[in-house]
Image 1 (cartoon, chains in turn purple, green):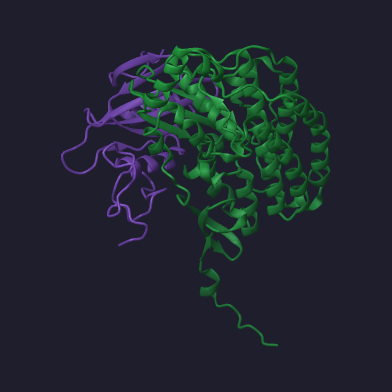
Image 2 (cartoon, each protein chain N blue to C red; image 1 turned 90 degrees about the vertical axis):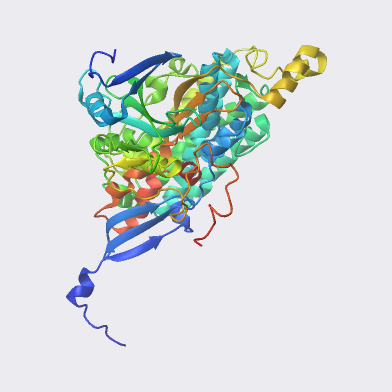
Length: 156
Length: 399
């Protein structure tokens, strides 16, 4: 259904238990999302969530998931992007807040939990975690019980 | 008597930053916001979340699939069974199992009781926030009866932890259906009582009508769902649009209002309680006999009595407790209509006995995003009414 519309931005698509997932190139995510929202056939006017996935130790390490819904057409769809971990700094991807304003808080949560920078995000502050934490708790290499030095209750 | 010096223009123009919460009863939990005020008018609201963040998603990644169920109920403790329903449906899809007919109907009963339970408490506290103290006592009376029903069926009063992957923990207790029937028979009249207290109450209508306007366009852009969009004129209910648990076999309407304000949200939720009661009555009538949990060795727990009598069942039970079950690798997104809106569970399985990733799409978290838009330009007192009309549960917002 979806293969016809966007151009060569697609890497692969997969069907599992009647749910369609499409992997797209991360540099084209904004373009893909704009088409998904504005194309009259797709009309994905509702973004359910944006989530991060850490596939450590396999590479590419990160995935960003966009779960879409069309109220007009009553269909759901999932877009995914893979992100390499760069040798220095944090992985980056374009923000989709301009397409769906609801992505704002979802992207802020993903950013602080996985350490992913969303380019052009209007409000890149932390959302749930304390400002003085410099760690990314939902990464697989972060211990479940936290750490006394890295996640203190109060700023040191 | 001393007279105050007249305000200078600079003092008049200064924006006051007020810290609201996190410990304040009107914020319904540990919600904190920085409110910028120009006199009594709200200029901007900046929510600061995370006071109840417990790392739910991280914890789930370190638990077996069956162990996650009680954790999900601690997200939205006001509609506890809705949470475990979303999670169980999602896992059942991945392992390709369907709950038996009887379990499906009982699940609907539990989900609709949770909806009434949540809306009752919302109604009482919301009315209290805008100055009407009486409704709270009446709504708590009916809520108490629902808690008694939960206790009867599962033991837990607030979080029953009754659903299991593939079905239910155990069958209904003797006498449950009679008590449920007595509840549903009187509940419609009880809703009439609440309505006499509020629907045409001049003070209540003054405080809520035209307050907290959320146009449908903005509601969709901001991802609002549930009663929030239905009060803005969109007849969207996941129970109708993408039915689960056999909701397509029940007769009920989607209450819609077009006022886009706090009063419309009140009307929608009251009507939803009536519709839930309608569903409950049908569920009691159609409840079939049969098993309450699906059978799949090595994936779903065998029934309790078999563990004591059959060797294979004992072994399967032991292995499930020690090693957990290993679903096939894959991913699924299951969403349901919770009391607050689209409650979604996105689960990635990598074939091991722990979820690789579990993302909880909490409706209260997303609905809260529209708070700033709704309260700008309104009085500070309206902000409290607007906040309570969103019906947030902070445990779900922060997870």
